[in-house]
Image (cartoon, rainbow, N blue to C red; front, top):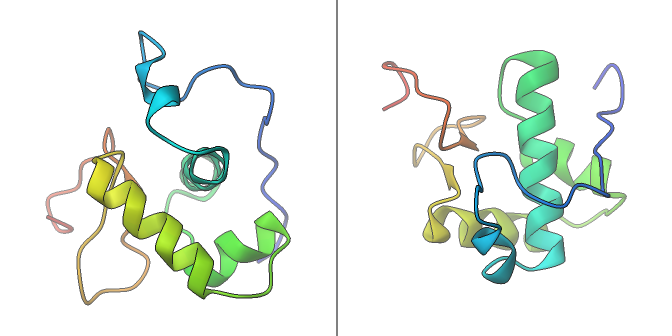
Length: 99
C-alpha cells in the first residue's frame, strides 16, 4: 500500500451508470467500495485486496468489507473469480485470464 487511493465522494454517478439507476440499488457504503475498487484499478492496474479496501475506508474489520463486495458481485456491479485473491474488478474491465 504505497499511497492512498483518493476517491471522489461527491460523484453523482458511478462510472457506466447513464441513467443514475444504480444509485437506487446500492447503499452509500457499497457505492464507496465500488469507487475504491474503480479508482484502485485506474491507479495501479490491478485489484485491491479486502485489506486494502478496508484501509482506504478507514475500517479495521474485514468482515463488513467482504459482505459489501459480495453484495456488489450479486448486483452485477463488480466481477470476481472465486478462490483467487485480488480478482475483484468493475464489470467494464475484462481480462481473458481472469474469466
